Length: 151
Image 1 (tube, rainbow, N blue to C red):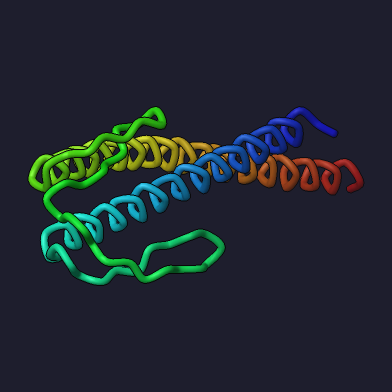
Image 2: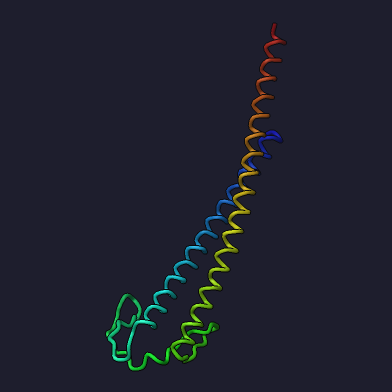
C-alpha cells in the first residue's frame, strides 16, 4: 500500500472516530432534553395539583398506583448525590428551574462541542478529497508516461 493510500486510510479512521463521537454527544443532548421535559412535567404538576388530588405514582417496571396527594405545600425534591429534601412548593419549583438552567448550559456546551467536531470532520473530508484527486492525477500521469514509453 502506497503512502497516499495509508494517509487516506488514516483520514478515514479519524473521520469514523469523529462521527462516532458526534453521535454520542447528540445522544447526550437528547438525554438532557428528555430530562428537561421531565422537569417541565414535574413543575406543571406541582403548580396545578391540589391537596387531595389523585395521582398515579410509578412503582417501576411500568406499574403505577393511584394515590391521594396529602400535602401539596411540601414537595420532596432530589438535590443530587442521592440526597432529597422536603421543600415548600415555591422552593421546590425554584430548585427544579435551576436544574433546567444547568441542563440548558450542558446542552449549549455539548452542541458547541458537536459544532467543533463537525467542522473538524468537514476539514478532514476536504483533505481526503484533495488527496484522492492528487492520487488520481498521479495515476493518470503515470499511465500517460507508460504509453509514451511504449511508443
